[in-house]
Image 1: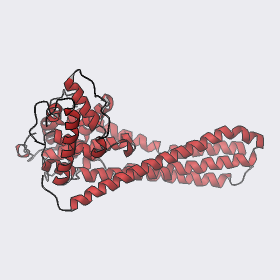
Image 2: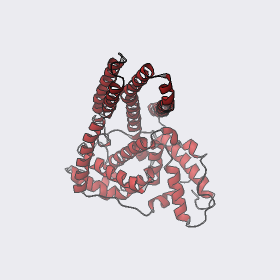
Image 3: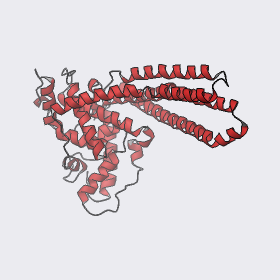
Amino acid sequence: VEPIEAISTEARSPDDLYAEAMSQFGPSLDRLTRAYEADPEKRRDLSQDIQLQLWRSFRNYDRRCSLRTWTYRIAHHVAASHVIRETRTFSALVSLEELVALPDRHQGEVAAEKQINLNRLFFLIQRLKPLDRQVIVSWLEGMDAESIGEITGLTSGAVAVRVNRIKEILTHRFVQRGTYAG
Amino acid sequence: MPDNLQSDDPRQLWQGQVLESNRISLALIRQRAQMLQNRGKSQALGRLTTPVVIGLLYLFSVKSFSGQWSPLHPLFAVALAWGITGAYFLRRSDSSKFTASNAGFSDGLKFCRDEVERQRRHLRGTLQWTFAPILVAIASFLLALAEVSSAAMFVRATPLISLVILWIGAYFLLRMRQDRALRRELEDLAELENERTSQPTSW
């Protein structure tokens, strides 16, 4: 993840800011979209919606926060709206605590280890409530607690608790397969 | 648990995944923005579905029971007025400026709370302004049917009436369940907000 200071936002038009954000965070946004939508067709639509709303949002951008925080906030907002709309009811989504109890669909599979682990990761993430999803995606992107807090609005303590839970869940799931020693 | 993870850790796995790029050009983004605007207009027309359905049921009722049951007209007038008012209010809430692009200053917690509240308002609005007037229209129709038809004819219509009642009950229960789930989510988010106002702990 690029340092915030590396991105100069002085005297830029919304189009330039959008281009800058996409060149800096484009791959990250592609991964983020995958965390929110499993269906490829819907994912394409969601990705395009994120780009549209991001482009629109730069009319309001006044540099009160970094370009990175702004970009991730908008992307997570669009994706969270999508999840809330698509899921219809929150009872289908789980919190981090409930995630521990979910059965591991991929247990026992042996081929294509990396792909299986990645699928397992998506299986877990795509069942989470939007806010927990924001934390896990930001952590997977390599962000620190302060940056995650800026995006999600959670305190550093609340972020730390969640990240630790995520690590426990992932350790439990991945160590079973002997692939993760985090 | 250490934070420096090994090469096959979830973060490496996550960041090293093969990407599918759905990147679009600025020209396409502008085109999509226009498309969204047009979709908004057709959504506005869609809001007229309720009064149209009530109107059609009214015409059918007038044709079938005209002059045979006097409360038919005022009851349908109430349902129609209710449906039209609802279409106006629902349209007004559709066109409110709340979009993700205007919420860059909100963090995830605030946005999620606003979005869940908006979904809850939408759900309640649909029950109040769409479901209720249709219910009044259906009830008026059934009352007129019960009043003017013979017992044998009413018995023949019983399966259809039962299905309608079942549909109404199932729809209402489903929406109530959704409302409860949204309320629970709002409570969870409020708890997190309270946590934020208390002393933050270190990382």
